[in-house]
Image 1 (tube, rainbow, N blue to C red):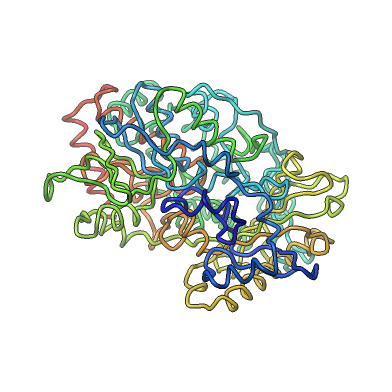
Image 2 (image 1 turned 45 degrees about the vertical axis):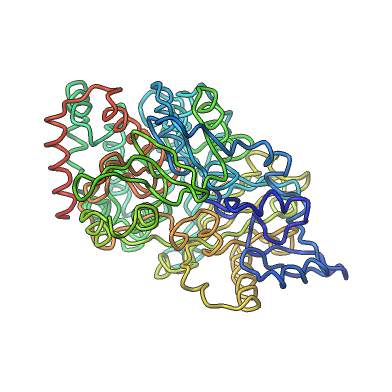
Length: 616
């Protein structure tokens, strides 16, 4: 929550566990527009300001963002902050991010007794939302895959909600993303590419930009479709469970063999089979980067096939009311089925029994001393937080040490939530999702690639009348924000925010002049409110991966302890972590005896997976 809040909400946010892991920037942006006594706008420091500084600022100024606190105090007072501790749960889940909630939803649908422990006040992690001055802002990305209703196994958000009896109304986006890319001799005005919902329309548009590569473009994306169609034919569960895999092979042998052939293949390898234009290959890199935060050479082909095609098959669909409605609906469904979601539950320790190879996770201990015992413990935190902070470095398994050689932390983000006059966009249709990049060489640099979403174009209830939302974010590293005094920190936030606004103004003329509300978050904000190491959004390869086989799945080397979310296959993104949740729930259900399995084959198969992964 914003530390410079009015006194009427201070009690709701000053408790020891009030600032936890569920929201990217929500209730404590690092800087906001304020209205001072003179009426002149100023800048207010929030999350990291010293107490005396916060108090002095309150005397002269009232932050505009604090006039509408979310969640409001009356809602906070109603949040469940306790669950029985005298029982052994089937699963104790750390964190209510989408991976944790997807796992919980699948398990309770099978009859499991689950408790989800959330440190913050809002569910969903970076898929949550927060409200200010009549605006409903998505914490993270507004681009939602997985809401399709066509046959197949890839409409994961639809299926996840249905498992607990929920369904959300969505709005389809006809243009999935609009790229605004660097100028060149071939594209003197800049390369503009719209990824249309209809696949053939997108291929046609991209081919018009690169007519000499038209055949290769079609061949490359058609190969992505072969991967996607194979995935979509299967019921997506745990790739660590051999009985399920063999059953799927018996039912869909061609699909399974197709996916097996891509298991160690990366996207860049496939792209270069068909494409040679350097700019077009950079475009493929960017197509991967915007969801994996790495280029095509480091992105498994199976992951790319899923994303590049689901945007046309199921499409990108925005949930009415904001992305935060997804975790809210899941929480409703989970609790309606007798399980628990506990807020302000600060997990400090994963409790274990045994030593060495015989160590087993048996529960978790909160900062206030409460102990929740479980047959399994499932962590939706990063692997760094899970093993180094909650389990302890002294218990770090060898395979986790090897993981840290293969993977490094992905960047965090600098985020900007803006309210603008609706006149900036006029009555003409404007695409909702945009990618802005002015220099190909800076694609992976801090602030190089700018992600922009305008969700109120799809759902006007998100903004006050006559206003629209602009949500912009760009990769950033926490090191660039350390060791500063308050004034230097504030000045840098305002400088970077203004730079991003100017870049957006070049694409949306008049936007800079139309800004009427602004909140800023830095990697420090993300670290604090998502409770993630350095604000990172998961691991990225430190070297070329062995396709999908380098990435850990859900089981860990500690018996009874599982990981879910962006630190497991398939990686980052809401649909990806929901996929991870489906796999985790199935693996846990098998280990609890709720699903059939073949123990001897299971042990041998997972030993093989581990050896391949560790050797990679």
